[in-house]
Amino acid sequence: MPDQPAPRLEVQSLSRAFAGRTVVDDVSLSVAAGQVTCLLGPSGCGKSTTLRMIAGVERPDSGLVRIDGQVMFGPAVNRPPEARGVGLMFQDFALFPHLTVAANVAFGLTGDRAAKDRRVAELLEKVNLTGFGPKHPHQLSGGEQQRVALARALAPRPRVMLMDEPFSGLDNRLRDGIRDTTLDILKEEGAAVLLVTHEPDEAMRMADEIALMRRGRIVQKGAPYNVYNAPVDRAAAAFFSDINVIRGTSRGALTETPFGAFLTPGHADGADVEIVIRPQHLKIDFDRGGRGPLPTPQDGTAARGIVQRARFLGRESLVEFRMDFDGSKLTAAVPGVFLPKAGTALWLMIRRDRCFVFPAAGRAPVA
Ligand SMILES: Nc1ncnc2c1ncn2[C@@H]1O[C@H](COP(=O)(O)OP(=O)(O)OP(=O)(O)O)[C@@H](O)[C@H]1O
Ligand SMILES: [Mg+2]
Image (cartoon, rainbow, N blue to C red):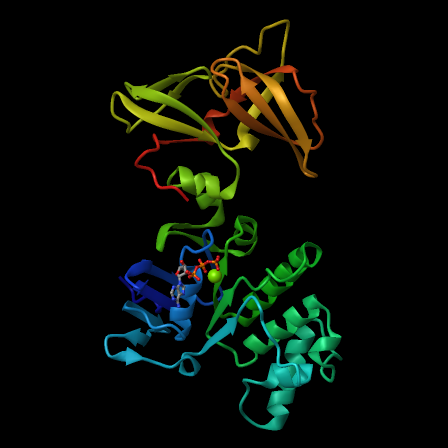
């Protein structure tokens, strides 16, 4: 095999316990130059601790951190943060209040004055703040401050950018635009980026690869499309959207439900399974004098439900049903405005190509 270049950032089996409790457990990942990996997971799952260990501000109990093939942390090696070539950006991205914008951006730069000035001007232009150099942070809006913080972190051309919820202090209106600008600049600068977030939307928007973390471990890694469309377990599916769950028992690799039979290969005879469907993948059809649409191979059999509540959420409407077959609740999402009255009878079908089958909960982990 030809020699592959070393990934820009490589983390192997990183672990850390606090007071006997393991909060980061055998985490491995690698990020290539110019790529963005999002470390995504619920609050307290160990994302920040992982990032802090890579940065060198928290000491791992074990594991290896390499940047461009050079060991930053490992047996008998623990380089200080400033010798790792990493840029850091945290949630509270505190700028130095007594320094001007230009001085903030120049903070980590070495070299002669003219070279520093050039780099500062180049970055201020990139973040669309040309002319803001002489101002002080308190004269800037939150979004502008965030962009100065980004420029400051990128100024020394870090090989690796570590970002911990860098957008969470911004209001919603600003956030999408700033995320996109930030992503463009990160790509231009070519650093390997590890971005921590607990928001699936942010990870979907920013990441080349998502590393889904739960209770200290990475449970799934992949491109956003794959992580969303092929979740490893029920909790991984539930992390990205509301889910509907239909239970059944697999027999001969088939599970019979009120929505018809589902293929459940790989599940033993008699094994309880959960069929998981996102609300976007339930199809709704009208009642035809007490009957629904005919079964189809793609959508299976329709089952009747009574609308409990319908809400318009902007891009889509969410309709909650109580199902005739067992009184359970299912939620369907419909693009645009669809607000049937409570009490309306409608028929639901499940797209066979968009459902996931998992062993029934009990042993399954909870997010
Ligand atoms: N210095 C510390 N001493 C003791 N416990 C700690 C320390 N730092 C973190 N922890 C604990 O480790 C766990 C993981 O914390 P961490 O900050 O890495 O989570 P996180 O995934 O970043 O969460 P959030 O999304 O809320 O920021 C938490 O239970 C936290 O209380
Ligand atoms: Mg955190």
